[in-house]
Image (cartoon, rainbow, N blue to C red; front, side, top):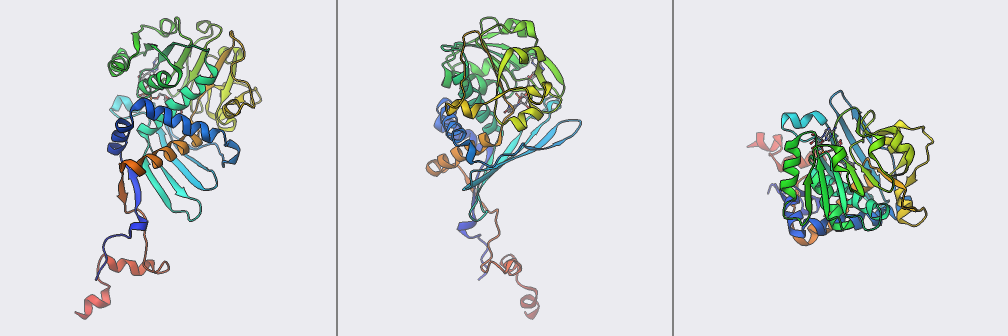
Length: 358
Ligand code: NAD
């Protein structure tokens, strides 16, 4: 008899956008952000094990499409992600993504997942994990500049992981600020909408910049940044796309994910190629100091690195085992005889010589 159903061993768990939303609600957004941060921290602490490469970027006038691969020797992962600042004007997202984990032993995929929501979650978890070691002790207030898709995730992660109680919002589009403030209602934060970036940073110990513009923008100028703050710079993540005045970089101690990638994409593309930076994994393992003085300006020049996506996919893979929030996907061909791929076609229609004999 013709076998139409694919072999169960070839079915790949697929986490759709719908499943990811349900997973976030099932776990709870704050516990999930803490869970993601702990997976990212665990992987950063075994940093040297990983295959690392700057992401592979295909640039166009409108934006960028990138592949972000890595492996710990047992599991391989990659993310496909775009960045198109003009998209929101057309009703589309600036950033969308999906990703995959595979077994290094046989190369078979073991998970396919939406990663637009998951990228916002992992970026926020990374920001807060880093702020936990770099922001002034007892930080309560964050300025959130750029109130688009990432902003609520960034804010809630800082609450869940660093104990943030106040957020001061600013966006050049007041509609974005109103949206962000409405979404944050009920999360136990004091939310203040501000009319300028200057106003937003008043009294803030943490300043997050998360704007999208394909140019060298100046979201923060030198005179706006006082001593002792932590800057979490998220939006400058492409060649020719930065948010901070170079003078701020010269006054800051700069922390990065993977220098080889950040020097191409981050704020530090504005500096000399040998400008000193500290790798954040070394702070997490205790090999390098984090914040060491009250007046120090710490800057996390975040661009997003493949290991964070790997950790996030690993987290999701572990969570769906107990929640069942996935579709089994018929992604891989599994012929009865591995060398008879052609013969497998007979499962979907009779072989021609059988059909013509009838
Ligand atoms: P988005 O388009 O949804 O939001 C960006 C917001 O910035 C918009 O509301 C826009 O009005 C605002 N903005 C633009 N110029 C501004 C200015 N001068 N001052 C204040 N606000 C301004 O984008 P998003 O998904 O929130 O992403 C924001 C940025 O973060 C993008 O550049 C994206 O590439 C980057 N990003 C980085 C990481 C990372 O890991 N570092 C991850 C995801 C996204």
